[in-house]
Image (cartoon, rainbow, N blue to C red; front, side, top):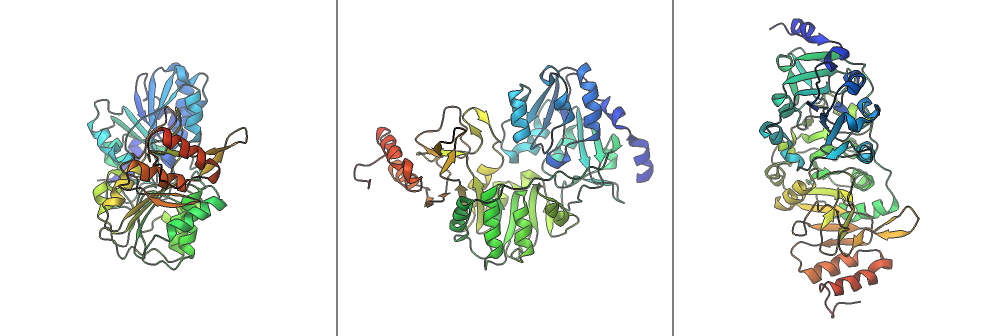
Length: 446
């Protein structure tokens, strides 16, 4: 099979590729750093003549050109698997909607749905000598998307890192319909927020619970970064990585010599992840690195994969929580912030792991727009808030005021534990609310 000849036969322009999209189509726009650029610009020029084009994608790292057309809501919908700041703004403009699903279910969803993608358009690394285009740091659900799309258009970007895997980390040219040689933009960077004093206080509590040989999953944000920084400076050794999102903190821990994966029961010696987003440091580390394993999310986030790894440590953030132990990590009331992602999968999988623990962490308070201090721990979640982790599933809860294990506690024990790590300014108020809800014992210390 002459791959170079096939390449030339399928090579086209972004403008020609954009002509494939028709009114009413479902168009998959890749994932994170794989969102198209050149074809997106060409398609934006066509959008005013199209109607009811439905796009799927998620965790946008730059604003697509199709979002910038006049009155986008009249021509398209953006259906997000996981929201970021760009998509939250699009919600307010009336054309962006969150698609609810456990992230681990996404590959099967593509394979099962009746409404298959009409077109898939996304960035890939240049074709290798065997005819494969690598998905870069976006294995996630892309193989399933390609399998089910009627037309597959790849946009080649020479700057996309080649991320080794073992399964479903790329697509063969024989399954590609059109190839566009893109503009080779730099890979968009996503820098985690700088750790605050609160983040560092929470990190110290969590790191004290991590043993040698533990396997790590970190979310994104200041707290996971603070945890990673402390681990890099610690005496811990032989750590492993099995995570949904690969973030800069893992690079720091690796460069400090703390990660070997030697004690992993599966994928020994490999750092496993579904997708990655961070700074150039991260992309350079992943590029052609055989230690790192890019894998589909149905594998990385499968509770069976997670639970097969001893001493699994899952560390994630929350927006707020209530006195029943319900965790909201997705919204501010009815206003969407992110999505379900894989948090619940890792909370469940970590507890099934021998010696495993899951940590939900957050600052005890935040400042409202008017500057007033608000508690993240509330009597009951605000109407419209999303329950990401049910009260039955939460293991460890951590704020800067302490760490509590909520597993198996009765309602009064749970309320007492949660209030004990709330900001002192709000504890009396929370106790009064707990009393009204009959989840506070009179004998409890006030």
